[in-house]
Image (cartoon, rainbow, N blue to C red; front, side, top):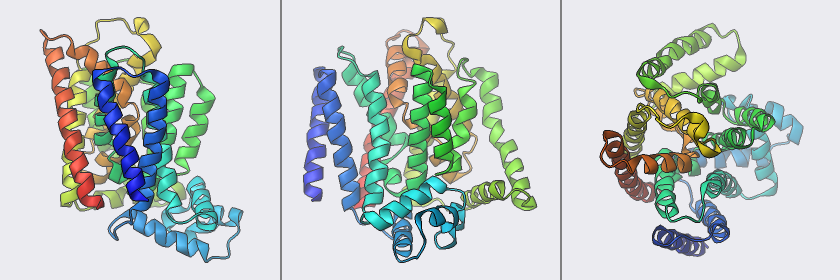
Length: 375
């Protein structure tokens, strides 16, 4: 079965390559996006997880739930007793675990996660895609940027983080494009009930009308230091159970050992975040209100959050997982840096062109690293 999905993915990748030289109509490209999502989700479902991955542990949880006597509602509320104490408030994720355990094979969990995650990304990419000649380069850079900030291995294994980031990003994109505040609120709540770390991006939505600037960059990078003290207070006091769980999880993140697999992903993510931060410090000469489709605020959001993530550079897990949320806006980032790269005589254009080259190089390295650790 995996051969079928691999072949389908290969056809999609070849078609994307053709689009680089010759634009493909939007309707045809949407069909390719759907096929790519099916191929990626199918491949993930066919790969048996190694014991070192979170998905292996999720499979063990599914077996325990399958053999338990909990009803659906009882498991949503108290399922953490037989699964993991960290799932005490993750009611939406508990519901997903129960449904997969009782109605689907274990492989249904990575299939659903990968399908939703890449479905949201390709949905945003389709919204930003048009039939003009510049779209081939934009498509390539967007896919490269997404694969660096949210590697396929992490979607496959870090189920909760990827799923929560996809849902909250979908709500944020709808808020910017169609002013759908209700969708943003609903998706934020749903994402929080899968993994609370996904909410870290929400405060920066309110800052996205302005660019960070040097002072903003300094303050934002320093914010994680203050946050670590606040979380340590909740961890030691234990007054609020929910905040205690969040703080304890954060504390555990700081103790994670960086192995050879994570080192490649870590350096790639940090490199791309630094490049994005550098580009964001150039003042935008074109007034914000003249920007079409509200893409400038989205790019500002990504810049703010990239700086915030860089503040966790000494926390291996946080700096890898926080960028998941801005990965879905890679089509917007790609469009912005491509436009800036056209200013060939300026330092800004040179930096943007450097970002594109770095992004593509890291994406190729990431493909090799993903294959090495998945197979």
